[in-house]
Amino acid sequence: MIEDRGFIIHQGAIPADAQERLVADIRAVAAAAPFFSPETRGGRRMSVRMTSAGRYGWFSDRRGYRYVERHPSGVPWPPIPESVLALWRTYGSRARDPDCCLVNYYGAGAKMGLHRDADEADFSWPVLSISLGDPARFRMGGPERSDPSRSIPLESGDVVVIGGAARLSYHGIDRIAFGGSRLLPKGGRINLTLRVVD
Ligand code: MD3
Ligand code: FE
Image (cartoon, rainbow, N blue to C red; front, side):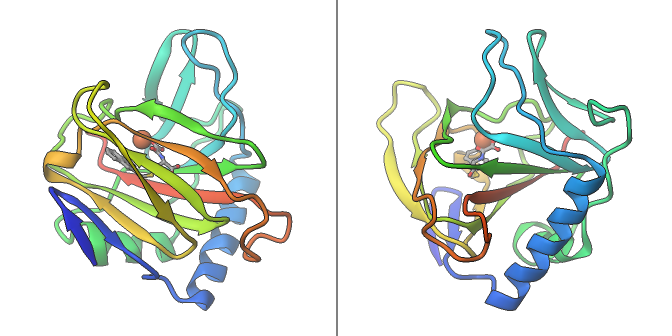
């Protein structure tokens, strides 16, 4: 366990069989609420494909970023799988369950630019991140975009808790090592982020 000002990495927290279970449960989520590529405010398609589970899902289009109660197809988001909630209750909080499990899929060449997660109502709740599949370089900065940042390797089975002073820090995914893990037969990386929204 590595802790630095509210940013906690639990390396190798999830055993191989539990990773397989999570992937199967996420496949079921994606069957009900298919992955899509959100459009940014500037009208560009994100390279990361996304879907969500829970009361809210994360959505973006030319009107901006926000949480919405339905998938773009009009169906409500499926419930957050128990396998995912169990990790939140162990590493996130026992006080309440999250409202949203954002599912990010990174194929070859996908990245996520430096940003802050600030669409939630109460920043005293942590965000929990679960990495599955190919390794990635995670970039962690500070509360200002211009703050120095460092690159942190994340691998399948790692759990990261972002709370305290780190909660409003800029961060992103620089690149993934496509094909570097055998968890997903077609390669790529899945990241789950669990959030309390309102
Ligand atoms: C640091 N996802 O979905 S997870 C995102 O791996 C996102 O897909 C990345 O950033 C991914 O918004 C990184 C780790 C993470 C999540 C939320 C944070 C780091 C964070 C919020 C504040 C600071
Ligand atoms: Fe983020």
